[in-house]
Length: 254
Image (cartoon, rainbow, N blue to C red; front, side, top):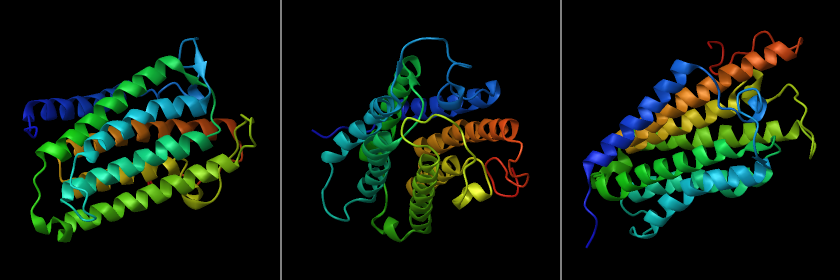
């Protein structure tokens, strides 16, 4: 017997995501990994960055992918199935590609556990909604919200992947020193990788036209936008020759 949609947990999960994003903005501190390891995180056990990112991102792929397996397998099946496939595609890359290429600093285990449970909850929320609650007309594939949303998602993912590539090239294996990123959107902003992912989730929210995706896009804007702001301030502080015209997140504006 197929599962029936329960709206209460969907609404509660969406509200929790949005509230968490608002709290992050209120406190104004970036999460204590990467540049901020040690200064914002109590001393404790750390894992190598590659292992930590793999473990943290894994449930964001496994949970919705497990839900997706039970959906129709036609190349262009129901729109909700295709949209859930986009979500899985992003986290397949984050789990099985990005995590094995990153050259970041050791990752605090306490933040790994927080991230793991966040990714599990968000993966369940997005997957559950699209599999059991979302209702799209047959012509949704032709709707401007779907086409423009998918375009933004792909554009944002491309920006994110290209920006991560630029950042990786700044360091040799084992090197932990910081350098000024150059090229791509880094010409205009300090948080090009963050902007790419924010664009992705705005596109996903538009394509799905759903409350859970909107809440996740808002959370991503708060979390990643705050991180871009602190990255920009970090670069300006330690590099005297940092480009004066470069903004934090939005070219020419902010």
